[in-house]
Length: 375
Image (cartoon, rainbow, N blue to C red; front, side, top):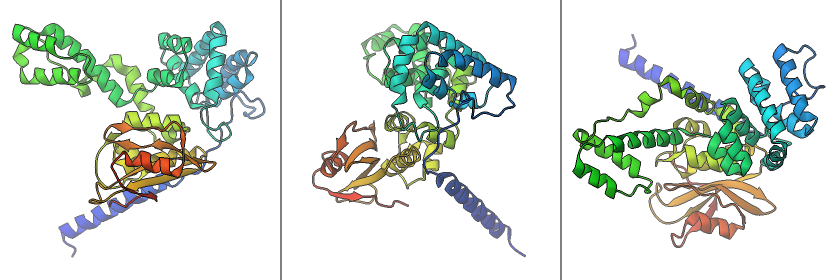
């Protein structure tokens, strides 16, 4: 009869194998995507239209009379591929905003359309980001973006990572602490702290935990704050970033991959992870982040590379790896992730410039394509 420890070990082995196989299945389908069929294309939708589809197409036609490409790309968004009454209402708001600010919307869309490969990407990601703002009824943010459009400005308003949400929570709680200080000496210390320093709010919250008697207010934990009914939109935003396939399809251009890696990932030494594992944990070293970036860029239709700068030292700490796009013998370094975040070259480099950039002024090094294996 098989002993209990042996049965447990066998069960654990099967479980680990299942997880490994599942991860492999998730991460091997990285071939180029194909564009979604727009619901605005009358020849491409089913003859049997639902009431929601009829309403949505009617709204898109209002935009299409002024800018057909704009309406067509709106119809490719995942939100309009799977319609709900709330999304149709949001599309109606979008059309009204477009009518009132057509010049600004058309100019912004002209820039949006150039992000990524239209012939490969499933949809225009910046346009989705703008639609999210309308869907969440953040009309002031829409107007702020349209007033002085740039991709960075749009994503700053629309793409909210958990780190961004923690920062908002931290600033709100720190503000309440400042107003609740009951100790004059502690208040002097607070007044002397550099409030422009990026660590000020964290420092203040940490200080309140050491000296709780000096404050009449006790900060709420971030986890408790996230349960508040008033934060439904924030939770909805976080849900948009839960599905691996959806997110990696969304990251269909160099600028978008850079933004995600820089804002969502945290640096942590350790073994190499698959793109799926990196996405789930968000804690990666340079090789894992480079592999994730390569996966997204390949899926977006780009020719990709992974390269490393190697120098003498232990295997864990003697090289740095990045990934990006190859074009006409030049290299755009998109993922160059380290303890200080991600660096995006923003310009095309030759091989020597690529190696020097990855080396980060560490002295002599050896350039290599690919990377070391860290198990």
